[in-house]
Image 1 (cartoon, helix red, strand yellow):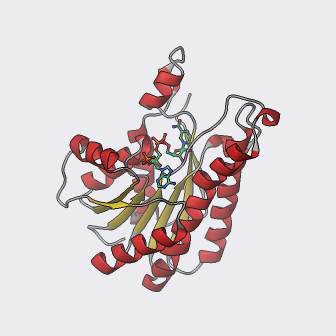
Image 2: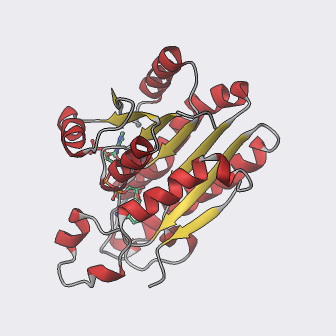
Image 3: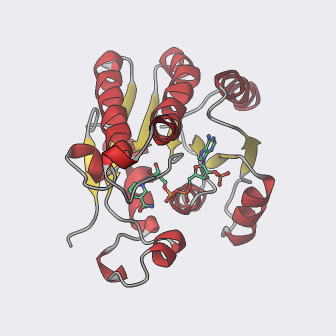
Length: 236
Ligand SMILES: NC(=O)c1ccc[n+]([C@@H]2O[C@H](COP(=O)([O-])OP(=O)(O)OC[C@H]3O[C@@H](n4cnc5c(N)ncnc54)[C@H](OP(=O)(O)O)[C@@H]3O)[C@@H](O)[C@H]2O)c1
């Protein structure tokens, strides 16, 4: 990967995404962060430790494929390339058995966890193939690997995106572009702390620890890793 790299962090204002943004800023890379609400981006800028290169924000609703294509085209026009794409866009719904969750929840999970990634890949992969280089990391979840009582629709959307990434990796073989997934368990975020105040927070994984793995996967040090789905839930 070129250094400083041009890195697109989709969902880079979220709890995990902001740690990913910080990890690349710390490495001296040029980071483009997608946001939906300007306020989230302003909050990110206020909390970031500044780096050698300024962070750039782009407004993006990943549910709008045309808007994603336009945003990626604008990045390519400005920077000439995208070295790494990290997708930290996603969301959770659960707390009820499958038969109590209607199709609207399924649509929401598929939209946030699968369609968003597809829209990004559709826009970014052709440019990376032309470059003959690139690294892509998607944030899936451990629950994508097996049955997940109470969060079946979320788990199904994460299983689907793992399948998408596995196929992508096969299709990219020999192109110079690498594609991998990380699978967090519960992340230690403010939202999780307020949703589960009785939980043992010490068993959760810090966003910064996951961000370090993601940054490694994007680096040349990880050039042997392609088509992997890597658990990032610590040793608990
Ligand atoms: N938190 C956990 O315990 C946990 C566990 C396993 C896996 N994960 C996965 O890790 C990833 C990040 O989770 P997180 O806890 O950091 O979530 P988060 O704090 O809610 O952040 C999600 C990010 O995605 C953005 N986003 C959502 N829908 C979007 C859309 N349609 N277009 C553009 N941006 C959109 C959000 O932007 P706005 O703020 O503007 O909505 C936000 O920046 C997700 O894929 C999640 O499933 C999380």
